[in-house]
Length: 439
Image 1 (spheres, rainbow, N blue to C red):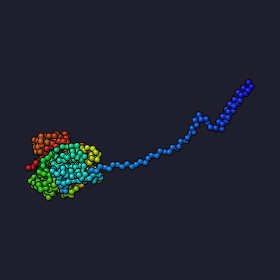
Image 2: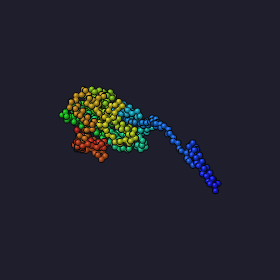
Image 3: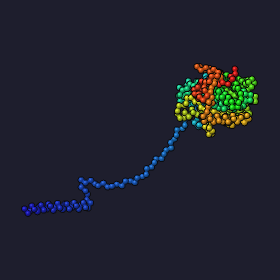
Image 4: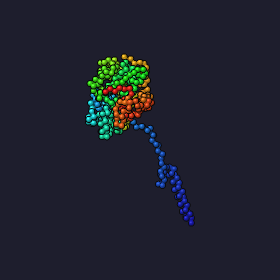
């Protein structure tokens, strides 16, 4: 019995000793039991570094598209005002834009328009122009074959277009109106002569602008002024143009001469005869050095580059071009040197506006004031002679299919009504009342 109690006592004592030993080991940093997870020690995060922005790589802009403007001239360039003005326009475009090149062909007829065009395209041309309608129209036949090329042709009366076949003409009649004011002031005999190419909508329209100017000038000065027109039958025929100019002077007592033809013969005759000459298409004194302000009273200057620039811009931007372009004095082009020029303007010996009137020309101040006023109004788009005036038929002109010449005295358009672009470009087929057409 006593032994049994002793055994129990020994067991209890052993348990106490083991418990004490375990506590001692724990206090001394003994190893944890296998069932305990080791405590995670906190780790210090690495010091954050500022985010470095990657260096910007220089971006290379795509080079501008290379553009080649090709003009097919119906005549020679040297010694002409029409093709000369187109040639100057091509050069001015190329001078302004480093990525534009100008190439050309001269004396191009209708049969050679397409072969020359394809030759020019093979040389890189992506704008191809015919600078007269009769030889420019064949370009429409290859427009579909070359959809990436812009083709263009001057308008005589046909208005055929395609998305890449552009038709165009400047409102030259605005500058011709200003010339007419000056011509009315210059004549002392009351007779003004026009050496003209042949009846066409283009020619009739331009002569109408000049006629309205003469009539307004004569009315302001209370003068009786007659306009005589005689046709050559061709745009460029120096011999025939000379003979007609002499006829106008010798037989009709003309003392102011102008022309709607293309050679320099009428100017030569005017200089030889000691009468005033009114020029067309270019500042012939200032640009060509032809004659002087002793003979040339005024000229009008055409800046075809206003139109060609629109095609170049469309090509650069990848946009379709306008298909009918008929800009006037309100539209401008900025030359490479920063000079801003309207589509048409009066010029002489490098001067523009009223200053272009020859210093030797006896032009009354009231005419100069009207020239300055109308020029400024047209440049602002506020006034136009074809809107302001009535169109009364002279009974002469050119019969068109479905559009015969109106009888003499008929008012075709009232004063104050603006004619449509389409009508002016394709249907204006009659001379204005007051003009004498010589056989």
